[in-house]
Length: 388
Image (cartoon, rainbow, N blue to C red; front, side):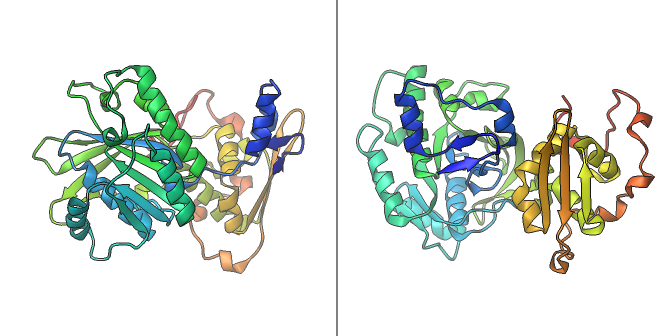
């Protein structure tokens, strides 16, 4: 299958990719075509947290990382939110021991999901694990999440602890996750040596985090404390620190922040655009002009290229709320066209509550009136991307 971008056809078929490689040519695309291409967003187990690919969840012994992993499995299998983040409900597989899993499962829920499968024995990376997982995926259809607790159980015993070995082992699991179009989460340990950056404490060499798509570090405030922080970083998510509290009665890590803070800054901005268009119905102009109109309603300072990127990224969200979006390029500029379909059914949708604060274009001051180089700072800007 090929996707048209107007100027070039993007090759997305695996067989076509192999043909290009066998022909001895690099598979390339020019930057303008890539910028204009409409690409499918990555799938996820937990939106904006666990996307498709390979991830590491690491913590010190007895930190509660296995409790967290099991709860994540139960939430995804049941299609329930994780700290305010939507999940992609699907089959989940967790590798661990039966007795401990049964006790813990009954501690965290009264209704275990039939979509959650538990495996007590699995091969190693060198002895059939990849084939076992691929067979499981074929037999169960859409598999949203696979958790291996712990990574060391599936690695062969070896005295070679080099960067090359760490990277090669995780690269095999990364390729498996991509091939199966699923999310693989590896429960792992931390090094004993202290480091001011928790992400540098993952046991092993830098090849571990280098091969993974995302890394999550669970760290308690101290050994006896029920308060902790989950440090999150990855290629397809915004780096963040989630403040958590472990409930010793339910054995669940609960988020100490309001669920509303889990909503990403880009979705908040797009929600403001949707609210405004439900009133104004139509806009045609540049990203700079749209920013000037929406200026006082936005939660943060944005560059025009960031707004353009977010509009393109969230075409689906715009369409679902009755807003059509097109981008027309000329030699000197890009013209954004936004229009609301006038569907009254969408008028009840309010994303930000800020539409009433948005003045009409005629009441906006011109850009020339702004002081050059001055960035307006408003409350809540900590979730917004830094100005380049």
